[in-house]
Image (cartoon, rainbow over all chains, first blue to last red; front, top):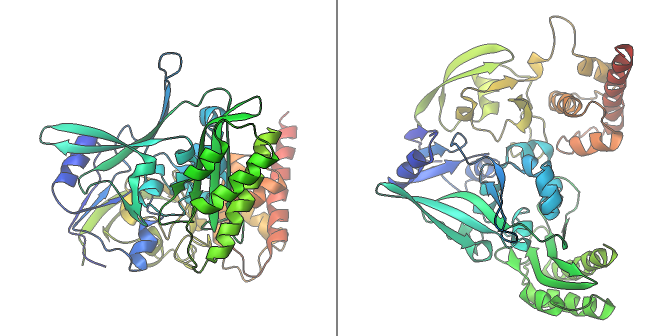
Length: 293
Length: 164
């Protein structure tokens, strides 16, 4: 563990971004991933420790009304998993987020863990990443550019570059996750597996979403967790489902595509064979749920 | 040695002013810095709930939270639940129902159970189980724990009836 030379807890985004631009900074919010990583020796502190929990404007969930079809939902990076779990607007428009939050760790960890932290930690098994991939979300990254804030948006399915790695630069702060309000006929299902229901790092996780009209799925998005170096979109599975009337033949084709989409490894939690098998089982189960919807 | 940070926060309704090393966890501050040994260290990684405390009305694992983040916050530990010499109703219910075996998980379990009942005074047994998922008892005494929490919930209902 290296020494922390400076601790800051800015209230304003400007000050936080200026500090990030000024040199090596360890960012902390809920600390539920950071603390075990530090004590386990996987990470060490940089010279500056910056607590971002007091930055104004990063802890709200807002629905931004657009013209008829282009409304957006913006979730600030400091919103906790508990807040997502209990948010009625999200339950109504993006229920898959609440489903994933409901299966996330434990109450104590949900109360502390933030959405921004879960995404930046870039775990291949990060539970909240799956529903955001299904929702087609993008992350908002802010940096200090001399005298002003510069913002860029990165689609979440391009954000992860490897286990624990993402596209955010050292001087960038993830400030929000943004996605289009799903149309009225949208469905979304999340499923994860582990030896016990709570406090489990997923053996595999899966999310499926899209627009359902008279048995046909459109704009399908499928996401898989813990079966590759990053959480990933199941492009072959999506293609097997897009525009098709959901029947047992289509479901069988999707199950076989899902097993091709993933590239799991053997590790302490499960074997490659078991993970591939489970992905097929869960794909079938979730698509049967869609049929019954 | 990392830089030391001055903190002001409220602990069990009393103000605390203290200097802490920047990397210290809340659990270490409570146990070693403030000599409050009720909050337990067990797994140290948020799996077991033995270190559960309430911060600004929400329960968290104190082994994961950084002490510097306590600035300006209100903290309640197991030591703050008792009113004078009388046990808190949740503590009393745990005693009455024989929910305590070795006792090590109890401070976290009681803090979490109390939080759940405050959040939802009409908690069902299923909701209790979900809410206590983050608290592990290795004596496997969960049934009596649930009985104790159910008794407190029942108590609240009775009170509700009395007051109309």
